[in-house]
Image (cartoon, rainbow, N blue to C red; front, side, top):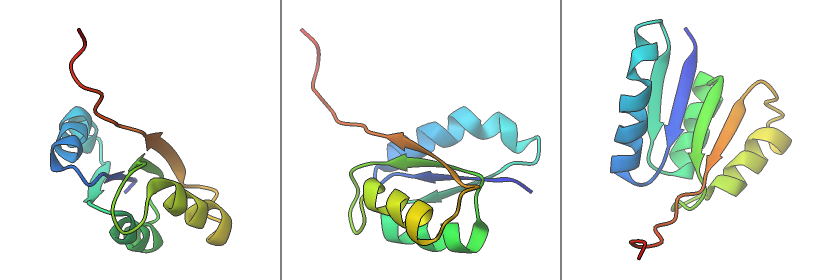
Length: 93
């Protein structure tokens, strides 16, 4: 079963991505979530997801460091990572 990992320290962002992707669960894709980089790294090691949606700014381990570990240290070339830089910039005027 293919896995997609959603990593974000903001619960509402994780839920939004889960809701957006829920239709592919019916096709046999498993959605997994993590709230920080350290937890995500453990999940990646155990589950080898095919795709990771990864927040940049997170506690414990940021997205850039996690991506570096996965790609350079673990040499997991078959894990595709989509970086999600999400900064709140306020309300446009």
